[in-house]
Image 1 (spheres, helix red, strand yellow):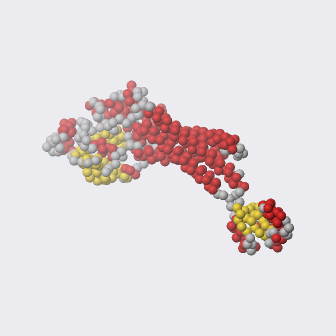
Image 2: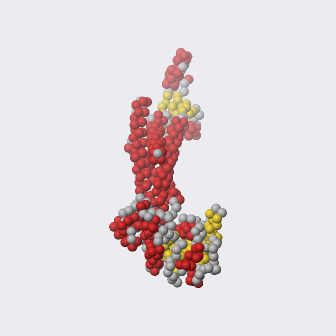
Image 3: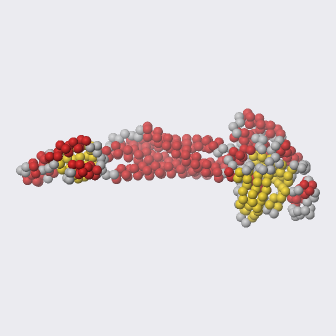
Length: 266
Length: 241
């Protein structure tokens, strides 16, 4: 009965580790793909500028030389008149007889840093009619980053708890051997390596399982939401398994050293 | 100087075991500690091994505080405890050879040395038996062999002959004496001190939460009327001497 309880506890902790590892991988995958697709489209600031016709050439040169500018589009007077008409169809008949000179020349500029661009326009070209019309939303990005961070923390926590209970179980079972070996002056690593190898094997298998599970779920998500995102690649899997093993090794060393110190001598 | 107890106090709850204990064990000595049951012999041994910490004061081993030594210093010490410490599910030969395994010796080397000890102790037929299958006396011998297989420079033995008859107990004490003559320092606590007398043997007695070295006169002459009249222990020592 005790053995069964132990087995259930161990299996549930390992399962928690696998589930959290899978969630971490998925969260990382979603975050990466959202950054690469959705957010890339809207990641730049957009500035609308009213351009004086006399300064148009200078303005164009400025846009071409400024590294802050990603792309730009200049709308002449006629374009703006037409766009206004399209925007307000009920005014079309009012706008049509007006001369083009009543409408400004404008530019829509995508820049990396909107406020800096506007400041530069004011300082260098003395332009006043510039305004920021779009700043990318960072909420989704922040949310995904936070989710990845939270899952990372929970995953490490699950790893810690799993190793802690494993070590306590082993310490209870092996206390006599440890105590004797300690009395005989053996270095703790004589005991540590075989134990550590066993735990790392479990963590390794659990990590691989988490990778496989995340791949399956990623494919499902792609199917359900009609996404065309790449599934997590070998690089991510390899990094995940390596980080898992490395973290497990470090955590296990620290816990073992502390636990072994508490074993009585002889 | 090998060991030095400096103003050591040991208290368990309200019971004071040692009070301002100042006591030194020199290198290359053969010391015997006696004392009544519960007087603190095992506690003293546990403090020497680092199992118990003094409530106050310091224990100096080879010029450094005991706590400052690395675990490796224990390789030079052969511990023999009152209670079995072996691995029950392992064979006798494995238990005896364990210290050599930890030192990286080959299986052949371990087993040949373990067999030597089994022959000395008359346990050759028990080589493959499990440790947990042994009798009390046999366990004591295995503990003895495991402690001495490395030829330690310091032997700490807490009641090493507690479960043995007189003949076997004398045999083990003779082995300890041989190690002492080879240069080892031996420190034994026992209810049954060796019957032989030798000027090199230092005898100590625990009394009144302290340790007193017995003078040659006290060892050679009856204790009656000299100290601790009420203790059967003192009378035992007297009779055996």
